[in-house]
Amino acid sequence: MTLDLDGPEPLYAQIAAVLAARIADGTYPARRRIPSETELTEEFDVSRPTVRQAIQVLRDRGLAETVRGKGTYVTG
Amino acid sequence: MTLDLDGPEPLYAQIAAVLAARIADGTYPARRRIPSETELTEEFDVSRPTVRQAIQVLRDRGLAETVRGKGTYVTG
DNA sequence: TGCGATTTGTACGTATGTATA
DNA sequence: GTATACATACGTACAAATCGC
Image (cartoon, rainbow over all chains, first blue to last red; front, side, top):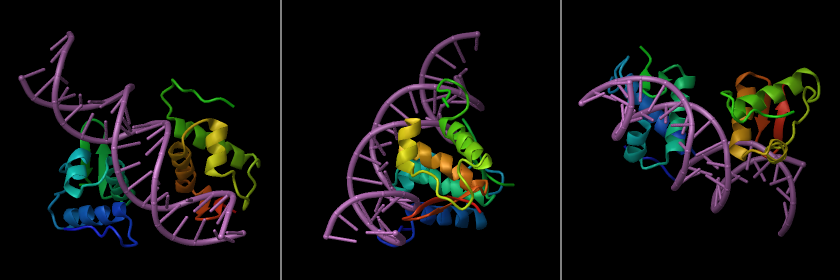
């Protein structure tokens, strides 16, 4: 998995697409927690605000729900 | 108009409420442009990302639409 | 009970790119 | 060509909620 840094697609959108694909294929199963923002920051080598923006996309699409102090969960 | 810095309500939510009220009472008329992010930054004495977060709330509620390079407009 | 680690929430500042007028 | 305005992305700091010990 690589991100296209120079392309027109924003990083957060690319990351959101990767995460959405992982939800779709079961890499992140329903009702389970996805990696923390810090872990995703390290995996994709982007800043936390960018990771949070990607997760926001998932929430807007109804794919995930976030609980403060716990994490972000795949919508079951 | 003052903001409650110590209260539980986030700054961006308070600002969004103020802007929404201005839309509701006609201070910001339909189809007209609201002040720029920079102007709102100065008026509320907050950072631009905070202003942008407030405007995002207006967009999510369908109260405003943002056009890149032009400004944010009250939904007509 | 309390403390500490983890995790998300809020907010700041800054830089760069792109579109419009 | 310049100025204005929004979009993206970075980094940083501190607060608040949760959980395990």
